[in-house]
Length: 557
Image (cartoon, rainbow, N blue to C red; front, side, top):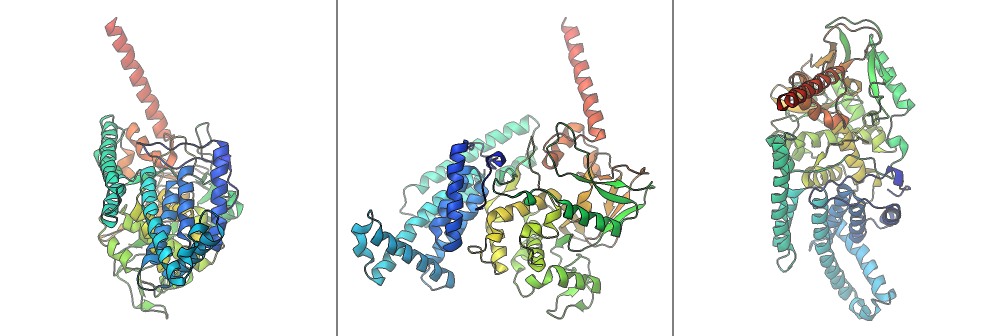
């Protein structure tokens, strides 16, 4: 985040309906981004100073990135809470040590504070002053958290946290008004969303989900370097090698499927037939490897491929069982070592309650596995792991869809996952909030649900993700081995050079009217689907509308 910020790459992610974000002009942008760079450099040397995290979080919110601001402010909250604990802890001691020095220097060198130098003249007085200042800072942190939740449209989180603040700070006069604000905001949002339902832009189910969660736009951050935004030639060549290994009739290509004036995606990859293919023929089998990840919460399932039951096969480090020696070997070379001995049962406990493949608890398992892969590979950045480097988020759309966002699943749980891995969330910038959010955006844009037996799960298939969408697809997929391994097969005869496409919305979605299909697909494309089926049906619909209008005019005349 201390890299140069580029104004031409500046698009706020905030989507607050009640108080829309203010897009900064170049001068304001330069001022705020320079401050973020300065604070980032200070945090690198003083990672346990909660005031630095709070101040940077405030800057990020003002720039229009509430999801990043909330991550920083939550870290400030964790630091302050540790610093105020009566019992000693390593983190609490680090916070108090950092704040003692800061407080002492402030009172003995800053002319505005030197008149109160006697209040820090002994260790005991200094300790009391530190406690007083941390408590004052805690109030500011909770206030900023609520500002960030509003900017991220997290209405339910705002209501919950404002009530928690009233209980936590009973002497404060401001937080009761936050409760009233949250109730008024909820009523306004419900009115706005009800109007969308009435106009057919949203279903009742979508309205309920939107009210329960917030949302932010997926955007490339202005400080992100180009190698984090596109798949370079090395990545493309590795994909070509994988296709040569697993397919005899298809190949990944730099796709031109969306190269028209409405396209907003520069880094588009697709798959074409390299020879004539007959209906039912296998295109490829995407096995569980470093480029693919499958997770569910089946306690009797294989950790690598989710197959059940497992066999009497394990690695020497621990008694975790696998369905085959292949899966045991894949685990030990890809994700298992960072997980081994770590207690992630809280994730599995939540995931076992999941009833759908879109449950946030499954996303948490997927994130945990992806972090484990990046730790195993020992790459210089998590976004350059074999899984992440192949996936793109939904950036640069002319009509972007919100990414669902809430405080627990997108801030607290990811941070807890990092802490379970013993990653220092304060001192290790490789797993800063912008990295976690970018990972989640890429997973959201590429994952697909899987249900093996009675257990819903979710999966990233590194080769499956390369196929583009069509509402009249010529390729489908199945689980031949009752595992996360995916078999892609042709659903009709395909000619050499033909684009091979799957459906992102399934066979049921393909049969919806074109308007509904395009609405469902907006999250992937950020514009109306332009597959052959949608283009023809939309044109026919337009003709029908024009005919109806002409007939109405004729009748009126």
